[in-house]
Image 1 (cartoon, rainbow, N blue to C red):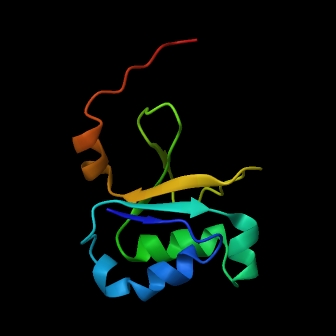
Image 2 (cartoon, rainbow, N blue to C red):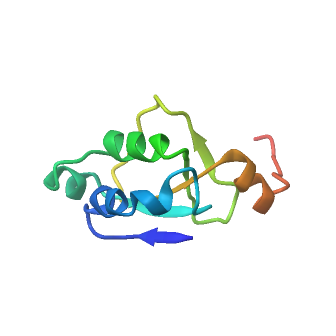
Length: 106
């Protein structure tokens, strides 16, 4: 697992680790999504996700309650007023660690 929290330089750091990431060699990458910081570094949430998708990773949003990471489809824009953590992995790898999702209807 790799965890990156660099106040906006996440994409640049991950691009520097391209050889380590290609083909999902690292099963889990957690990255802060800091939109303002990314933009200051010439990147964006979209470009970060596109880079990781090019390496074979899907995007998931992490929550504080320990529930199943929420899959974010590739063309879906993430809109938040907060700094959040994204998990880059694959659906198969995520399901190995979250084999059961309890759903409570409202």
